[in-house]
Image 1 (cartoon, rainbow, N blue to C red):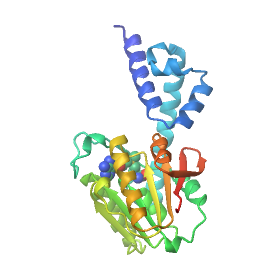
Image 2 (image 1 turned 60 degrees about the horizontal axis):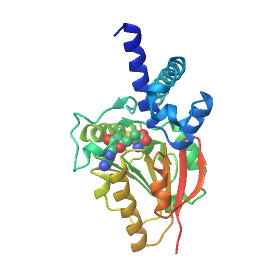
Image 3 (image 1 turned 135 degrees about the vertical axis):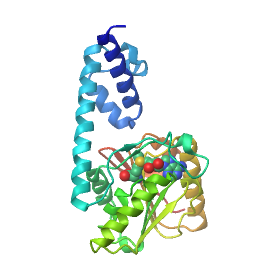
Length: 262
Ligand SMILES: C[S@@+](CC[C@H](N)C(=O)[O-])C[C@H]1O[C@@H](n2cnc3c(N)ncnc32)[C@H](O)[C@@H]1O
């Protein structure tokens, strides 16, 4: 195999994995932008080399932009939330390591846009991030007057980084008594009975997602209250809508859903 064909094969694999990891709406716009049809991207071998190069180039550009924005966020707040972290060698609590997706922090602009689309008295709500990683979203949530801010993360290295991030912002004078960092599996977390804003940045595969959905539904059946669900990169949105969650709105790379009262 020549160097040239090895490198295009590499790009093809990366591009196919990238397309697969995207929520339907985003993948749709990628298809339109590059005039791809479904068959081509289902079987990456059929995508023209020039298009593979163009998508790969854009993908690398957006990866670099994410690195720059990670750096900007972390240096602004004096914390460590950036980078990517794969779970292969990670020490993880609970049985769901193989269903977990890698760590990458949310883009603050997506988080803010999603939260801005919910009009609620924040002080009555608990904010919960399922798969909270290094805690970036919890730090962002702290700019809003939520009653409590809870993060659940099953990878102990990431949980430890989140704890040091909290310690760092406390040293700079921030109040951290609203925060709770839980080292645990999202499927085993008992939902607080408060009104909830739950955040999820496509953290796990469908089996785990379904268990989490069932837990939220049974918690809602136990105590009816407003529950909003912000799902960033909503690859498995249909699992939620088929289970009774209603779409409130959709934005760039997120869906906002809610549970209706009976
Ligand atoms: C894409 S990251 C999102 C991090 C953070 N929520 C954010 O938006 O910045 C997904 C996180 O979910 C965690 N995760 C995956 N499966 C999990 C599970 N079953 N229970 C708890 N955390 C999980 C991963 O370790 C990773 O930190």
